[in-house]
Length: 478
Image (tube, rainbow, N blue to C red; front, top):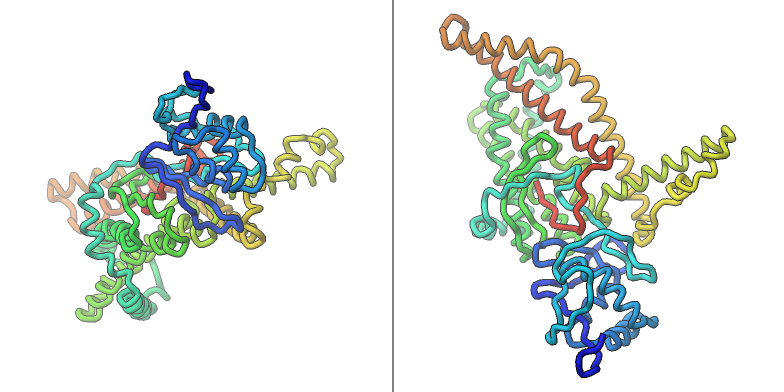
């Protein structure tokens, strides 16, 4: 394109608020991060990063091509630059027209989002979808509850819990509190019977977990603030049919992996502080009800660090290994294993048509996305894939064995709950027995909802209908 005075037209520039930086990952090659003003993040290959950094609204296509060729050590033509800008960067809506308002003839105006398409060859790469927190196994239907401007003062006030001089003693106290709690509970756990759990524990345990959930989320926000990263609001969302809390910490992608790992585990760290208080109360009063609540709390935190769903455990594994989008990598590994198994069977049974299937051979070849992570990365994703598959099988078997019993008995429980309510209103039944029946009904209802909620995302993922928004938008720690 030429301007009216036949001078070469400058390329567009990046919009204000678009940021470029390095991404700490487990890759053997330096990865880069593109952050959009709306908080979405994209991982860039080195050539694409340097191309984006050259878009200042003043350089022409030839000037950008020359500078880019010098930076990446191989020739890049002006036509290649134009193609990559038009097809890779413009659809993201991150480009503004240059100062002389030259029209570049894009099919969509600057700022119109249009995603998809394979990455360019020649090392430019695409925008790897590293997963958002609201994909099929993550948090959906988000509703902010506490805006970031109100959460930030609280996070700043408690961020010092991450200073080593404070964190080390607190972690030691958490460990000692656990030792005391389980030592005292050991005789009862040796002869454990769910029917012998005190009613107070059944009522107080879930309530205490909910009571400490905001403190858990504050732990994520405080960790982000300790490392000078921004955080978003605290909110609630749906995971399947379960209501979960989260806090947005998109900005931590620019931190080191070690710092991101601290943010990932910050919620469990903060929530574990409650164990110190419960153990101290039990020691001071001799009432072991508080220790049973420790058991409830630990079980809830264990579920939270389960890497099957996109909660704290998923992000912790991702940041510890430096491999983004673990669920996508798992899918690739499982498809590769299934394709290889199908080819082996076809070979043994002399099924020529199946053995020569181009689709199976393509699946068996697998993706090269893990090549940059070396042998350690491939081992890590193989272990994670195995654990993921075992967890999925476990939850599926749990549903198959438990749901039919629950469904069959639920109408009877509902009828007994109705009689219990009528008995309480009329005063014609034992209040203790009526309350116990109602607690059982509520517990069965919650279990049914939770189990269906765990199954629904797995079914959606298996059908390929999980939401997969582009980019590596901030993981919501929940």
